[in-house]
Image 1 (cartoon, rainbow, N blue to C red):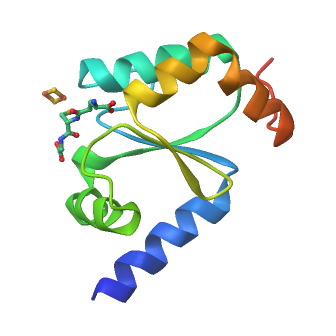
Image 2: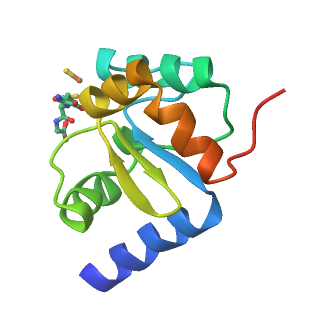
Length: 110
Ligand SMILES: N[C@@H](CCC(=O)N[C@@H](CS)C(=O)NCC(=O)O)C(=O)O
Ligand code: FES
């Protein structure tokens, strides 16, 4: 069972270089923390996939264990957890987030 969840998570992470696990969708975030990280990703202007953990209790629980990180949002770049709302906000403000996206050659939204 646990293996199945981890396999599903890996599949999602391998499908796209940037994945946001959040509550709701980028168009309709269902929590202020998720809303904030969506605004930041829009401001940085990069392409990303998102997973609505409210629609998927298995992933909601599984990803917490996978990365040993108990909350949402969770931003992944190239399969690695970058952080939640606080960390990503700090990285955005310092310019580190844009730098990371550039370094990893993440596609920009036109
Ligand atoms: N300080 C956190 C704020 C996020 C947070 O506290 N999220 C809570 C409320 S949305 C959460 O995901 N709780 C676990 C859950 O709902 O499964 C961050 O930097 O991301
Ligand atoms: S859903 Fe209540 S704080 Fe995120």
